[in-house]
Amino acid sequence: MSAPDGTTAAGTQPPSSVRGPASVGGVAIEETFAEAFPMRGSRIVITGTTASWARQAATTMTGFATSVIGCKCEAAIERELAANETPDGRPGVSVLLFATDSDGLQKRLVERIGQTVLTCPTTACFDGLPDAPERMPIGRALRVFGDGYQASKVLGGRRYWRIPVMDGEFLVEEEFGCVRGIGGGNFLVLGETAAGALAAAEAAVRAIAGMSGAVLPFPGGIVRSGSKVGSKRYKGMIATTNDAFAPTLCPITASDLPAGVNAAYEIVLDGLDFASIAAAMRAGITAACRPGIRSISAGNYGGKLGPHHFHLRRIMAGVLTP
Amino acid sequence: MSDAITLTLRRAPSGRLGADVIAPDRFATLSNAEIGALPLWCSRADMDGDHHPRRTVPLGDLFGIQGNRASTVRVTGDLGTVDGLGANMGSGTLTIDGDAGCEIGRMMRGGAISVLGSAGADAGLAMAGGSIAISGGAGERLGGPLPGAARGMTGGEIFVRGSVGRDAAIAVRRGLIVVGGDAIDAGRAMIAGTLVVVGTITGSVGEWNKRGSIITIGGASVPPTYRYACTYQPPYLGLLHRYLQSRTWPIDERIATGRFARYCGDVSQLGRGELLTWADDASP
Image 1: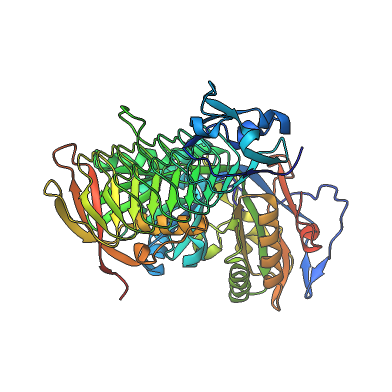
Image 2: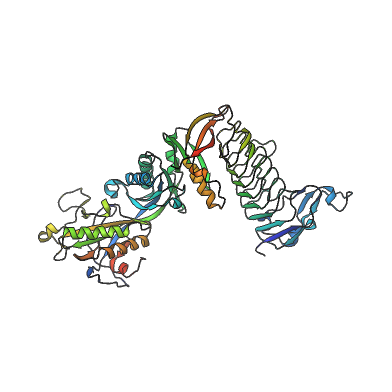
């Protein structure tokens, strides 16, 4: 599980009025919940002359953006966009990027669009949340790269900057929308073998891929290094290994792993709203419930730190609201 | 209160008729009788008699009025000599069912005007916002300035399906003008803004242009004060094409798929303006 401080811990289940299934496909759904935190999020639409170049820019932009602890933001590709879905009629990719506050989000967007999209051949960059009331002047900051040769155009009340570059122009929207998102939705796949747990986690990622409003910021969408708050031994460490879910430490720590579990993987989700994350968790958990998986769990802090609680059984019962 | 107001011109005026008062946002709060009492400027021949001292006539004397207190207005009849329709309007919808006279949408700030025929000279004169869509052609000085003013249109959008007269987009400061047909002497003294001419621009193009964008598919005679830069596919034109589609105003696909020769000018001015002329199709 990932939170602004990147830590995980097992906790107790707060009261819930809706009871969901205790198992799916023979896999136990633990009566627990994922605890998530408020973040600020933006949707960035990147287009290019080909889907390949749009994807290249998006991949570069979302690199080193797994956790706010070390990367200052969390980002991933949301989905690929057909030409008829983009503002300029070219193939594109939508990216979701999250930071802990608006200032941080704005800085990360200027840095990342400036260094990874502006620099990428043929691309253009647009706001994917035009209706969001909170606006950030991203293109306005980037326009100065044009050294006075940049030109602006207004279409439908939205301003765009045309910045001259060596293959023609980089087109970027002046303002990007910002919404109150959620970071750190998660679930844990507890398997009998490492290979089986990984296959189930991969199936969960495939099921979530392309769903609107939620992304998986970790490598391939899967985390193997779940963490807990602080350290038992080293002062100053913000987060250290979540020994409760480390199978090699079962006999010497207060393990939360059921008997017979030899590997666990975590799927971490950030989203623009609660329902998007809940829907993605439901799809992912459903896909992960397959032979060789003992149970599905989630990381939390006992409900004391994060205001957003994703109760696994409620979600599997189809309740996708808080 | 009704959903819409319909004005029907009973007979074509013998001279020009100044109908600045016909604007949807103005009608939104007026009763039928109050609308009928609004003054129209007219020539003497359209009054009770040539001897009559008045220079205005109540709207109700010349137009049949159906409906009241609505910001959706339809005007029908032979309106080719009726000028100033939609002048100063700030919101609402005005549909002109046929040709319109001069200065439609003069200084308008918002709302939408739709002309189902052609419009006379000075359409969108000094407009600051809103949109004008003209199904036919338009006269001279489309989106131009008021007499003696330094700036023409400062915002909004004008779409003309047909051809336009001289001096389209003259002194435009901001905004978008799209011409589906041809233009003559277009883009003169543009300060900024965008003029798209799907057809051909004859005569002068973009003289004294500072920062304006002039885009043509049919071609234009490049002025000597413009310098060739390169031939490329401006991503902005793909955005513009999609935007016009979304406004149900589609134009030639080549604007999105083509490569354009870019000329910088007018170098006798700032030289930050551009003339983009369609060169070839970029599709493999």
